Figure (cartoon, helix red, strand yellow):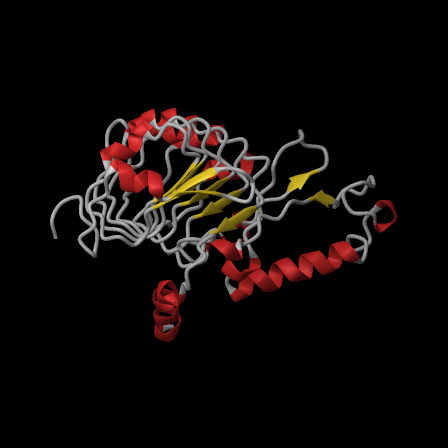
Length: 281
């Protein structure tokens, strides 16, 4: 396939890109170039400084330009289902990004730059279906992050910094080779007497049967008043009971099961991997 041409032989030029821009219901300018067989990121797109959202998903792009950070107007970037092996450091210049989808690529942990921690406006980050086993520690600075997709990767341990991201409430860690050798050590609770901060609870679907049974038994004891200990009338997280805990559950985000949680195109083809995995089980 000729460089810069799509599946139907259409060359992505600045003129074509401008014609593909559409206004979203909330008044943003979105450029959609999805599923066009693009092999090289069209550098002409960097001239479209007024584009707020860019969809280059379902292509064959192997590398992003080093100056991707010049696309300073971007708020929403979808690159899922390409062939990316790394992300350039300049992506940290896209400080206005609120949504970033890099799922279903060939990304390794070495290919994720520390500058991801500069994207402090990010609310949703999808890194599912890659080859990641760790995340840059600098991502601890992503205070605005609410949704994180890490499904279908190589994580043995949960990233430590997740529990301090106060706004993070939706995480998908399904189909990772997570180690639960520590048993209940994977379920972290914060007592009322500790300083205010985020608390991380592994979703019950990720626990082994033994751990799940143990957690349910503990929950029932707490619901009955802590097994005879002071419970402040059974009020959870507010009374003076020594066994009362203030909890925050990080829930599985169903919308991050597929590579593109906002696509309008039928996504049955993207569920094939999930179905095959469950069949093997």
